[in-house]
Length: 362
Image (cartoon, rainbow, N blue to C red):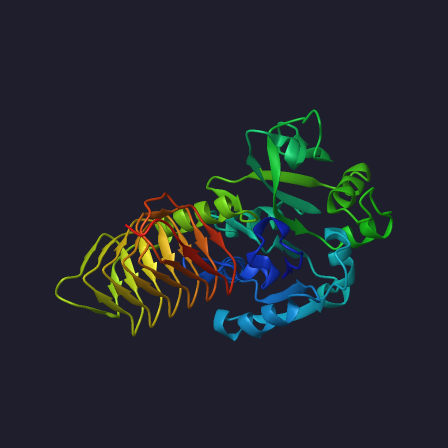
C-alpha cells in the first residue's frame, strides 16, 4: 500500500500568505498542515509516500519536509507542471504508484479520525475505491455522493445544484489500481482539468465496488483564514494534552491550563492561558496570550493582548492597545502602534509585512 499526497495548488483563498509560501506549509499548532497527513499515513503503516508538488512552491515543500526520515517514511516528490486536476495528479504519479493500491490525501485537509479502520475496511471489502465522507450543511459547494443503505456509492456529483445527499467528499480516497484504467478514459472537464470525481463515476458505471464511509470526528479544509483558525483551535483542543515548559518564565509570569513553551523562549510579566503553543526562542513581555493561540519560533511580542490567533515564525507585535483576536500574522510580519487609538483588530497579515496602527496622539 502506498500513498499520494497532493501539495500543489495556488492557495488563492489564503492570500496574501500564499503569495510567498505553500498553503500546505502554513502551520497549525506550530506544525505544517501537510505533516499531519503524513503522520496519519505512517501511523497506519503506509510509509511509501509520493508528494505531488507544483513548480511555484515545490522546492519549499521539499526543503521543509525532507526525505521522510523525520516521520519514518520514504518520500518521493512528483512535479505536476500545471494544475490539471486531481486525476491528472494520479496519472503523472503512476510510475511511483506502479500496480499498488494507494491512499490519495489532499494535503490541505485535516481529519480527526484514525485511518486504520478505513484501511482495514478497504482491504476486507476488496473495494476498488473507498471514499471518506462528512455531512455538511450545504453540499452544493462540494463533491457529493449518492449512497445506498449498504454503503455502496451509486453516484458522485461535483458541486450539484440539487445534491442527492449531504455527504461531501472529504479529500481522502483509497483506490485499487483500477483507477488508472478509469483515468485513461477521461476527457478534460469544463474547467480544463481531469476530475477525480469523473474517474470514480467511471468505476461506478463499470460496476466496480465503490463504497463510502462517514467520518466520526471533525474534518477541515484549511483553505481559508477562518478555517485555519478553527483547525488550530481543534488541534490544540484534541492533541495538546499536558503542559510542557522548556523555556524560562520570570516570577511575574503565569501559565494556566495546557501550554507548551519551546526551548529558549522567555516570558516576562506575562500570562498564558491554554491551550496555547509557543515555539522556540520567542520573547514575550507584558503580554496576555489567550486560549487557542499558536506562536511560531523566534516571534517577539511586547505589550500585546492576543487570543484565538496564529502567529508565524519571526513575527513582531508590539504596543497594540486593543486585543488582537481571530487573526493570522505571517512570517516576519510586524504589527505595532505608533499612537494611541482604541480599536478592535482582526488581522490577516502576509509574510514580511509591516502594519503601523496610527491615531490621535493623546
